[in-house]
Amino acid sequence: MKMSVRYNVKKGIPRINLRDRRDAFQQIAAQLEVGDSLDFQDENNAYKMSIEIRRLGHSAVTQKVPGGRRVTRLKPHLPTSEPDARSD
Image (cartoon, rainbow, N blue to C red; front, side):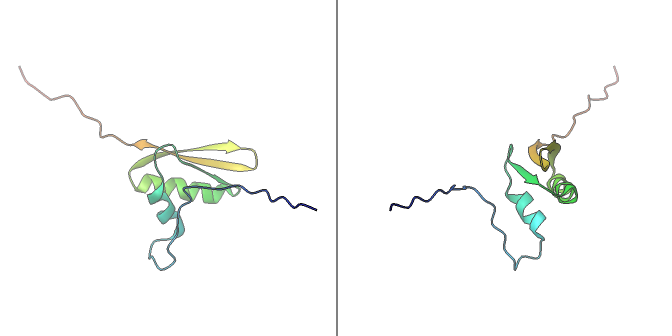
């Protein structure tokens, strides 16, 4: 009888250093690239992740998905340039 094993290879999984003073959410947020998403079953954890992403100066959006919430990192906030105040 021949056995077959099914598996999924996951790439780019953030690595957490338990000796780091930052908590897991801070470490993961620092490793996310633009367009990366994380799914959470718990709404509070999704909220915490979006806060950490924003603390790094990036935008984040949360969406309701079946079974929880998805947090996606967006492009960094660009400083708004105000028009020069020139007196003519």
